[in-house]
Amino acid sequence: MRCALQCFSKNSYHTTSMDEIGAAAGVTKPVIYRHFSSKRQLYSDLIKEVGEELCTNIRSATERARTLHERVELGFEAYFRFACESRAGYELLFGSGPRRDPEFRDAIVQIENEIADLVTSKIEADLDETQRRFVALGVISLAEGTVRRWLSTLDPAKYPPFESISYENTDAATWAKQVTDLAWAGLRGVRRDSHDAL
Image (tube, rainbow, N blue to C red; front, side, top):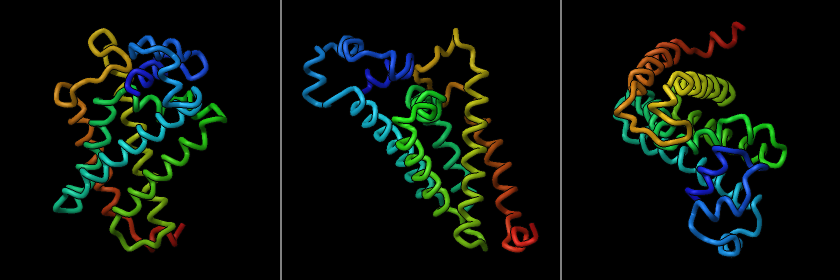
């Protein structure tokens, strides 16, 4: 699965062959077909596995929090850490390829909904469920937009695309802290009456 992730991320679903994946994994194509009925199933299972990993990381991080502020901080840190340590996985989920492909768009949307459900469940504010969901989507967009911008600033000679990098060896923690401060200030100002006034 790790080799398949690297192959799909560097190229695309349609241009990556099962022979390439087998060669990268050091196995023959028939061995892959013993575990996956098709390239489509392999890709779909990979999307699901990577999405579950991201959700698990965010959930585990936020459950360790002792305060609401720490919950926001640890959530952003988990998101940035995932983008560093699983760059190929992050690209698989949030790159343009799968989102444009009708075959896999639904799988990506399902993962996005799972992340939105998770973030919504962590928001403690005087808001109804619809309002909390709206706020959660804003928090997620802030995280994704910032991470994608940050990744684009990395020197490809030092940090080759799709290769994992150490969270501690980059300025990712600084970006995560700044986004935490921005999100926290916004979340503290969210009120039910401010939504009603719109």
